[in-house]
Amino acid sequence: MLITDIKRVIDQVSREKGIDPEILINTLKEAIISAARKKIGPRADIEVHYDGKTGDVEVFHFKEVVEEVEFPDSELTLEQGYEYDPECEIGDSLGIRIDTEEFGRIAAQSAKQVIIQKMREAERNAVYENFIHKKGKIINGIVQRFDRGSIIINLGQAEAVLRPREQMPKENYKRGDRIRAYVMDVLEESKGAQIILSRTHPEFLMELFKTEVPEVAEGIVKLQGAARVPGVRAKIAVSSTDSDVDPVGACVGMKGNRVQNIVQELRGEKIDIVQWSPDIARFVCNALSPAEISRVIIDEDNRSMEVIVNDEYLSIAIGKGGQNVSLACEITGWHLEVTSEEDYSREVKQGYDSLMRLDNVGLPMAETLFKAGYASLLDIVETSPEELAAVMGISEEVAKDTIAQADLRLMEEEQEAARAALEEKQQKAEQEAVEDPMQKNDVDAMDDKDANP
Image (tube, rainbow, N blue to C red; front, side):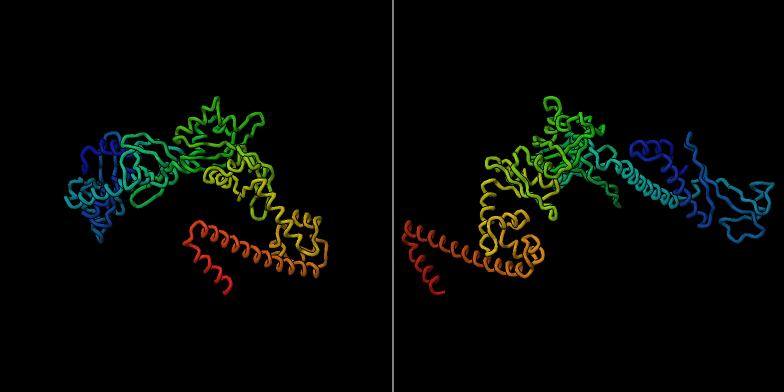
């Protein structure tokens, strides 16, 4: 035989590498056929038979019986055929059993190389097929080694990589530690399947809820989306298909045990479970919890929303480093601008005062313009005469004059703002000069420069 105890080898490789035995057997047959043709000739018709019970391999060289041989590697004469089958006739195909040892050392080496190559290909394909269906799922592994910041994880039949950007901050592992991660991708490459893992992906959080919350696994509670600042804070939106089931309560669990298990897995990452709503304004209010929202102003065209909160809730709505509003933006898919009641009232007053600088705009018209989305002179300048005429109930000619006047008033406001900024700068410099006489010359020079530009 070409390979001693071939059955044991096939069984061992199949078991250790997870390769279908049929693939290995076919690989063996191809290798033997390749080696036989190198020895006999490229046209040789070779068949290989493998006995799955005993592991015996038989090789047959088929030749056609002809009157005159033109291709010796695939034909033989009737006289030669009688040596193998005394009853053969012209046109018959005779299977001549051959010994694999006749292939010689070079042919055997070639067969070995084909087997190794095919085995590697089969192993790569087996790894890819075994793991591609696990993409988007959580998988367990053991830390095997470290490579330039990446963690190489042993999954049993294959290795996976957890790159630095997919690792949780402040997490430290050592060789032999068990680790859970999200299968972000399975790439089929020339060197073999590459399995990419992540512990920072928002889907990792969602998959953890699927494992911890039975109602999610059963489809009663639906996960509508998630957003994370890995290791710090996360938000996950949930809804229920059953009116009797509270989706937030189901995810929290009795005494918070379900969500607490997930928090522990994520090393203390704070998780806000948000009630999803088809009403975007309500959903945004839920997403900014625990801040209480006073009102929202929606801009459907730009998918943006101005959110007004009571002054005492402003810092809560924004969150540390802007995390709360940033996560709310990500989970809702809307751009959110959070403003306090005081700032909003100031902006409204400034907008009204600005609009009322126009000759044909009094308080009632200012309110009409404000409700139509014209909150400043800039909004008037950027609109068209047709749109402004429709809102104000005036002719297009008058609307054109109003827009021109708004442009002029806007320039005046900018000049006033520039003068105010300059005066403030000079006052600050003068105050500093009083405190430090050495700076007085600089203040005098500033005054001369402003007087003689």
